[in-house]
Image (cartoon, rainbow, N blue to C red; front, side, top):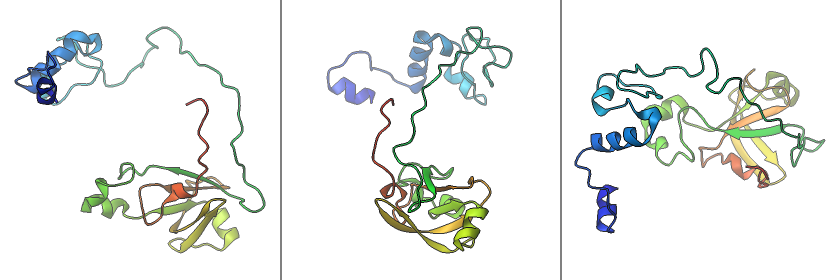
Amino acid sequence: TGQIAQRMGSKGFDFAHPSQIMEEIANLTPSYGGIAYSRLDNGGLQWPCPTQDHPGTPILHTKQFTRGKGRFAPLDYKPPMELPDDDYPLMLTTGRSLYHFHTGTLTRKVKGLNILGGEGLVEINPEDASALGITDGEMVKVVSRRGEIEAKAKVTEVSPVGVVFMTFHFAESPANLLTNSALDPVS
């Protein structure tokens, strides 16, 4: 990055070693003030670490919040754009697997990660699975107002009754094809 910036004529990117970048960060950001490459080489250091003699901060706010009491901002409830109904009685939620990142374009190439989480699953509560005649490990069709996909069922108490969960990492079971494209107006 520094070489690209230099070639584009930018000043201040003449670092000879990554430790110099860390020094600049520590000089400009008080909460990193005590972090140096040499300290990182000795087993790591957790932010914030404001001074060279500070041991680092493994857990924030163990005794009190930095600015006194915690500040919570209440939100007005806004119902989802779609709710379960007679035609679509379960709510689908999508998310990440511990083993893959985004669409898996990099992580799915790693054999060890694929052993730990190598396929898209639809997680369903035992009560819902029983009502629908679904058994653990069975291939099922997941249908929404926008389409349908197939995935292997994982019957688990982790999913609450009425909710099914799928990861979105797998092109073979592209869960996001089923979701509503309406965006959150706040975020």
